[in-house]
Length: 287
Image (cartoon, rainbow, N blue to C red; front, side):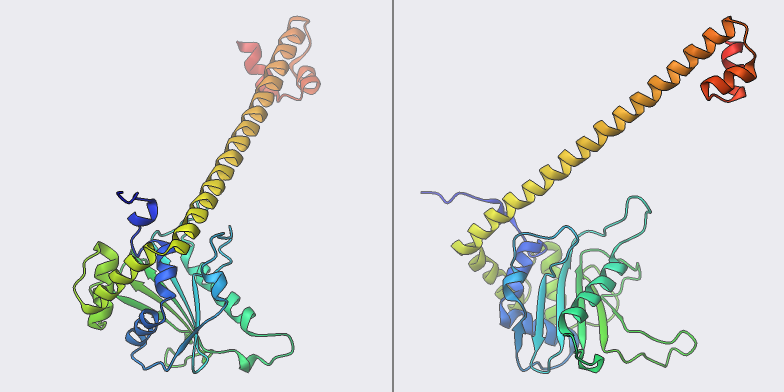
Protein backbone atom coordinates (compact mmCIF):
# COMPACT_ATOMS: atom_id res chain seq x y z
CA UNK A 1 0.00 0.00 0.00
CA UNK A 2 1.35 3.42 -0.97
CA UNK A 3 2.16 5.65 1.96
CA UNK A 4 -0.16 8.62 2.27
CA UNK A 5 1.64 11.93 1.94
CA UNK A 6 0.85 14.26 4.82
CA UNK A 7 1.74 17.91 5.32
CA UNK A 8 4.56 16.76 7.60
CA UNK A 9 6.24 15.03 4.66
CA UNK A 10 6.36 18.35 2.82
CA UNK A 11 8.06 20.28 5.62
CA UNK A 12 11.63 21.55 5.30
CA UNK A 13 14.11 22.61 7.96
CA UNK A 14 12.84 26.20 7.79
CA UNK A 15 9.55 25.04 9.30
CA UNK A 16 9.39 25.88 12.99
CA UNK A 17 7.96 22.50 14.03
CA UNK A 18 10.60 20.48 12.16
CA UNK A 19 13.43 22.82 13.19
CA UNK A 20 12.65 22.18 16.87
CA UNK A 21 12.78 18.42 16.43
CA UNK A 22 16.05 18.53 14.48
CA UNK A 23 17.64 20.77 17.12
CA UNK A 24 16.61 18.23 19.75
CA UNK A 25 19.19 15.90 18.19
CA UNK A 26 22.13 16.62 20.47
CA UNK A 27 24.94 15.86 18.02
CA UNK A 28 23.53 18.20 15.35
CA UNK A 29 22.69 21.05 17.72
CA UNK A 30 26.03 20.82 19.55
CA UNK A 31 27.94 20.85 16.27
CA UNK A 32 26.08 23.95 15.06
CA UNK A 33 26.90 25.82 18.27
CA UNK A 34 30.57 24.80 18.11
CA UNK A 35 30.86 25.90 14.49
CA UNK A 36 29.10 29.22 15.12
CA UNK A 37 31.03 30.14 18.25
CA UNK A 38 34.38 28.60 17.23
CA UNK A 39 34.69 26.69 20.48
CA UNK A 40 34.53 23.17 21.83
CA UNK A 41 31.49 22.34 23.95
CA UNK A 42 31.80 19.37 26.29
CA UNK A 43 28.08 18.62 26.39
CA UNK A 44 24.66 20.24 26.11
CA UNK A 45 21.51 19.75 28.14
CA UNK A 46 18.00 20.57 26.98
CA UNK A 47 16.14 22.81 29.40
CA UNK A 48 12.45 22.01 29.86
CA UNK A 49 12.59 19.69 26.87
CA UNK A 50 8.89 18.98 27.06
CA UNK A 51 8.21 22.66 26.36
CA UNK A 52 10.55 22.86 23.39
CA UNK A 53 8.34 20.38 21.53
CA UNK A 54 5.04 21.74 22.86
CA UNK A 55 2.48 21.78 20.06
CA UNK A 56 0.35 24.55 21.59
CA UNK A 57 2.19 27.77 20.72
CA UNK A 58 1.34 30.76 22.91
CA UNK A 59 -0.14 33.81 21.22
CA UNK A 60 2.59 35.99 22.72
CA UNK A 61 5.43 33.64 21.80
CA UNK A 62 6.07 32.71 25.42
CA UNK A 63 7.51 29.32 24.56
CA UNK A 64 11.02 29.51 23.16
CA UNK A 65 11.92 27.16 20.32
CA UNK A 66 14.96 25.43 21.78
CA UNK A 67 16.55 26.16 25.17
CA UNK A 68 19.94 24.64 25.90
CA UNK A 69 22.68 24.84 28.52
CA UNK A 70 26.23 23.60 28.03
CA UNK A 71 28.62 22.07 30.54
CA UNK A 72 29.90 25.57 31.44
CA UNK A 73 26.30 26.66 32.19
CA UNK A 74 26.07 28.99 29.21
CA UNK A 75 22.46 29.12 28.05
CA UNK A 76 21.34 29.16 24.41
CA UNK A 77 18.04 29.89 22.72
CA UNK A 78 17.75 28.88 19.05
CA UNK A 79 14.90 30.22 16.91
CA UNK A 80 13.88 29.81 13.27
CA UNK A 81 12.54 33.03 11.72
CA UNK A 82 11.11 32.63 8.22
CA UNK A 83 9.28 35.96 7.96
CA UNK A 84 10.14 39.47 9.08
CA UNK A 85 7.10 40.37 11.22
CA UNK A 86 5.73 43.92 11.19
CA UNK A 87 3.26 45.67 13.48
CA UNK A 88 0.47 46.59 11.08
CA UNK A 89 -0.63 49.51 13.21
CA UNK A 90 2.79 51.19 13.52
CA UNK A 91 4.70 49.75 10.56
CA UNK A 92 7.62 48.89 12.87
CA UNK A 93 9.53 45.62 12.64
CA UNK A 94 9.04 43.37 15.67
CA UNK A 95 12.23 41.32 15.68
CA UNK A 96 14.48 43.69 17.70
CA UNK A 97 12.07 43.97 20.61
CA UNK A 98 11.32 40.27 20.38
CA UNK A 99 14.96 39.59 21.20
CA UNK A 100 14.67 41.93 24.17
CA UNK A 101 11.63 39.99 25.39
CA UNK A 102 13.34 36.63 24.89
CA UNK A 103 16.36 37.83 26.84
CA UNK A 104 14.12 38.88 29.71
CA UNK A 105 12.46 35.46 29.63
CA UNK A 106 15.77 33.62 29.79
CA UNK A 107 17.02 35.75 32.68
CA UNK A 108 13.79 35.53 34.65
CA UNK A 109 13.75 31.77 34.22
CA UNK A 110 17.33 31.44 35.43
CA UNK A 111 17.28 33.74 38.44
CA UNK A 112 15.26 32.36 41.30
CA UNK A 113 14.01 34.49 44.17
CA UNK A 114 16.82 35.33 46.57
CA UNK A 115 19.64 34.70 44.11
CA UNK A 116 22.23 37.34 43.27
CA UNK A 117 22.38 38.92 39.82
CA UNK A 118 25.90 37.62 39.27
CA UNK A 119 24.44 34.12 39.25
CA UNK A 120 22.89 34.83 35.84
CA UNK A 121 24.52 32.58 33.25
CA UNK A 122 25.99 33.82 29.96
CA UNK A 123 23.33 33.68 27.23
CA UNK A 124 23.17 33.45 23.46
CA UNK A 125 19.93 34.15 21.58
CA UNK A 126 20.38 32.89 18.02
CA UNK A 127 17.91 33.59 15.22
CA UNK A 128 18.15 31.70 11.93
CA UNK A 129 16.67 34.24 9.50
CA UNK A 130 15.66 33.55 5.90
CA UNK A 131 15.97 37.27 5.17
CA UNK A 132 18.54 40.00 5.72
CA UNK A 133 17.02 42.11 8.49
CA UNK A 134 19.85 44.68 8.54
CA UNK A 135 20.34 44.81 4.76
CA UNK A 136 24.14 44.61 4.97
CA UNK A 137 24.63 41.13 3.46
CA UNK A 138 26.48 39.85 6.54
CA UNK A 139 26.18 36.14 7.17
CA UNK A 140 26.15 36.75 10.91
CA UNK A 141 25.21 39.87 12.89
CA UNK A 142 26.43 39.65 16.49
CA UNK A 143 25.28 42.13 19.11
CA UNK A 144 26.73 42.99 22.51
CA UNK A 145 26.09 46.13 24.54
CA UNK A 146 28.71 48.87 24.11
CA UNK A 147 29.14 52.46 25.28
CA UNK A 148 28.13 54.98 22.61
CA UNK A 149 30.70 57.47 23.85
CA UNK A 150 33.52 54.92 23.65
CA UNK A 151 32.79 51.81 21.59
CA UNK A 152 35.81 50.07 23.13
CA UNK A 153 33.90 49.85 26.41
CA UNK A 154 31.68 46.80 26.57
CA UNK A 155 28.95 46.24 29.14
CA UNK A 156 30.01 42.80 30.34
CA UNK A 157 26.53 41.42 30.99
CA UNK A 158 27.46 38.24 29.04
CA UNK A 159 24.32 38.49 26.90
CA UNK A 160 24.81 37.96 23.16
CA UNK A 161 22.26 38.14 20.36
CA UNK A 162 23.07 36.67 16.95
CA UNK A 163 21.11 36.98 13.73
CA UNK A 164 22.14 34.36 11.17
CA UNK A 165 21.34 35.59 7.68
CA UNK A 166 21.10 32.49 5.49
CA UNK A 167 21.25 34.74 2.40
CA UNK A 168 24.43 36.55 3.49
CA UNK A 169 27.60 36.82 1.43
CA UNK A 170 29.86 38.85 3.76
CA UNK A 171 31.89 37.58 6.69
CA UNK A 172 33.42 34.19 7.32
CA UNK A 173 31.56 31.14 8.52
CA UNK A 174 32.70 27.55 8.65
CA UNK A 175 31.99 25.30 5.63
CA UNK A 176 29.41 23.36 7.64
CA UNK A 177 27.52 26.52 8.63
CA UNK A 178 27.50 27.71 5.02
CA UNK A 179 26.27 24.31 3.87
CA UNK A 180 23.54 24.52 6.53
CA UNK A 181 22.51 27.93 5.17
CA UNK A 182 22.38 26.47 1.65
CA UNK A 183 20.29 23.57 2.89
CA UNK A 184 17.85 25.90 4.69
CA UNK A 185 17.53 28.10 1.59
CA UNK A 186 17.15 25.46 -1.09
CA UNK A 187 17.33 21.95 0.41
CA UNK A 188 20.74 21.58 -1.24
CA UNK A 189 22.91 18.84 0.27
CA UNK A 190 26.55 19.72 -0.31
CA UNK A 191 28.36 18.40 2.77
CA UNK A 192 28.47 15.41 5.08
CA UNK A 193 26.86 17.56 7.73
CA UNK A 194 23.81 18.50 5.66
CA UNK A 195 23.54 14.86 4.59
CA UNK A 196 23.30 13.99 8.29
CA UNK A 197 20.67 16.71 8.79
CA UNK A 198 18.66 15.46 5.80
CA UNK A 199 18.82 11.85 7.01
CA UNK A 200 17.73 12.98 10.47
CA UNK A 201 14.73 14.78 8.97
CA UNK A 202 13.66 11.60 7.17
CA UNK A 203 13.99 9.69 10.44
CA UNK A 204 11.95 12.32 12.30
CA UNK A 205 9.19 12.30 9.68
CA UNK A 206 8.91 8.52 9.97
CA UNK A 207 8.58 8.66 13.74
CA UNK A 208 4.98 7.85 14.69
CA UNK A 209 5.11 10.01 17.83
CA UNK A 210 6.23 12.99 15.77
CA UNK A 211 3.54 12.36 13.16
CA UNK A 212 0.91 12.21 15.88
CA UNK A 213 2.29 15.37 17.47
CA UNK A 214 2.20 17.14 14.11
CA UNK A 215 -1.43 16.15 13.56
CA UNK A 216 -2.24 17.71 16.93
CA UNK A 217 -0.16 20.74 15.99
CA UNK A 218 -2.03 21.17 12.70
CA UNK A 219 -5.38 20.89 14.45
CA UNK A 220 -4.31 23.49 16.99
CA UNK A 221 -3.12 25.82 14.23
CA UNK A 222 -6.44 25.41 12.45
CA UNK A 223 -8.29 26.20 15.68
CA UNK A 224 -6.20 29.34 16.17
CA UNK A 225 -6.82 30.43 12.57
CA UNK A 226 -10.55 29.80 12.94
CA UNK A 227 -10.61 31.75 16.19
CA UNK A 228 -8.76 34.64 14.60
CA UNK A 229 -11.12 34.57 11.62
CA UNK A 230 -14.16 34.52 13.90
CA UNK A 231 -12.79 37.40 15.97
CA UNK A 232 -12.05 39.38 12.83
CA UNK A 233 -15.54 38.70 11.48
CA UNK A 234 -17.11 39.72 14.80
CA UNK A 235 -15.06 42.90 14.85
CA UNK A 236 -16.09 43.64 11.30
CA UNK A 237 -19.77 43.12 12.14
CA UNK A 238 -19.42 45.32 15.21
CA UNK A 239 -17.72 48.03 13.19
CA UNK A 240 -20.37 47.75 10.49
CA UNK A 241 -23.13 47.96 13.07
CA UNK A 242 -21.53 51.00 14.69
CA UNK A 243 -21.10 52.68 11.32
CA UNK A 244 -24.72 51.89 10.46
CA UNK A 245 -25.96 53.37 13.73
CA UNK A 246 -23.84 56.46 13.20
CA UNK A 247 -25.18 56.87 9.67
CA UNK A 248 -28.73 56.39 10.94
CA UNK A 249 -28.29 59.05 13.60
CA UNK A 250 -26.78 61.45 11.05
CA UNK A 251 -29.73 60.90 8.69
CA UNK A 252 -32.15 61.44 11.57
CA UNK A 253 -30.48 64.73 12.51
CA UNK A 254 -30.58 65.88 8.89
CA UNK A 255 -34.30 65.08 8.61
CA UNK A 256 -35.01 66.96 11.86
CA UNK A 257 -33.03 69.96 10.67
CA UNK A 258 -35.00 70.05 7.44
CA UNK A 259 -38.32 69.97 9.31
CA UNK A 260 -37.21 72.79 11.62
CA UNK A 261 -36.01 74.84 8.66
CA UNK A 262 -39.43 74.42 7.04
CA UNK A 263 -40.94 75.77 10.27
CA UNK A 264 -38.85 78.92 9.99
CA UNK A 265 -36.45 78.39 12.91
CA UNK A 266 -33.06 80.08 12.76
CA UNK A 267 -29.93 78.21 11.78
CA UNK A 268 -28.44 78.79 15.23
CA UNK A 269 -31.47 77.37 17.05
CA UNK A 270 -31.56 74.34 14.78
CA UNK A 271 -27.88 73.72 15.40
CA UNK A 272 -28.50 73.72 19.16
CA UNK A 273 -31.55 71.46 18.85
CA UNK A 274 -29.86 68.85 16.66
CA UNK A 275 -26.24 69.04 17.90
CA UNK A 276 -25.21 69.82 14.33
CA UNK A 277 -22.76 72.58 13.61
CA UNK A 278 -23.95 75.88 12.15
CA UNK A 279 -22.01 75.05 8.99
CA UNK A 280 -23.78 71.69 8.65
CA UNK A 281 -27.19 73.34 9.05
CA UNK A 282 -26.25 76.04 6.49
CA UNK A 283 -25.29 73.27 4.06
CA UNK A 284 -28.63 71.47 4.59
CA UNK A 285 -30.44 74.77 4.11
CA UNK A 286 -28.58 75.42 0.84
CA UNK A 287 -29.52 71.98 -0.46
